Image (cartoon, rainbow, N blue to C red; front, side, top):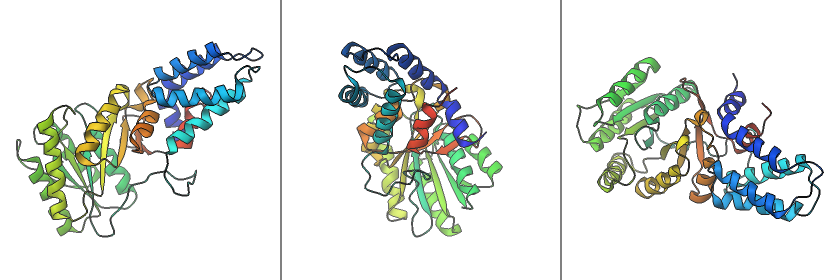
Length: 314
């Protein structure tokens, strides 16, 4: 299954919700009135794209079609175009539809340090393994640092993936200071000349202030060993959490200056619209999406292809 088909399959629940709404509300030959626009706005919000994004989409429809005879194809195209605009954000770069909008930023000097954080249960450790697989397939050497020392299963899981992928891994005994693991991982990566070091962190609730401070400490320690690091700070968000994911993004961004989102479990939710809400409210790009449970089911995010998959026929 190719990238587009995986994404299309992953977005099936969200797509069905949108398509049903359009069929119910916008019927060819009828006059588009305010009541139907308001109903459509409410249903857009059900996909968890947020009040702001839903309002902008409906305002575009209002300007173009209010009081006119409905042309369903035109309505579809307008919604698609507005979603693409919102997902691209305000980056002042030449956007290439054949390439991802926000690929990883690699350091000029080895290693590139990528810090990965997220709430328990988001699929963070698995997402790290998937990212390691993606990077190694591109010919980069990868070292893992198992910083989730409070959960032995997380270290074991990461060690298992490291063995399967042929990556080096740095671990410490259960309960060790996570910042010491991050420092050791960076230190070993420098000595080994590794291209990329991926640092796992303990899954934590965003409202636990002491644990957020721990993340801040990890960031300071990493930068002490490798000036300018971490070069990327990725937050893994479970797409099934919907708008709660936006609250997570705000809290983690304040602690570790998030540079991008990995949106996991996109294949299990009708709340794929949260991708738009995060992009618009936070200015943090979605860099990867998880569209399945296999090690290869992590894809670089491309806003145009995302929207095309969202509106593709079944």
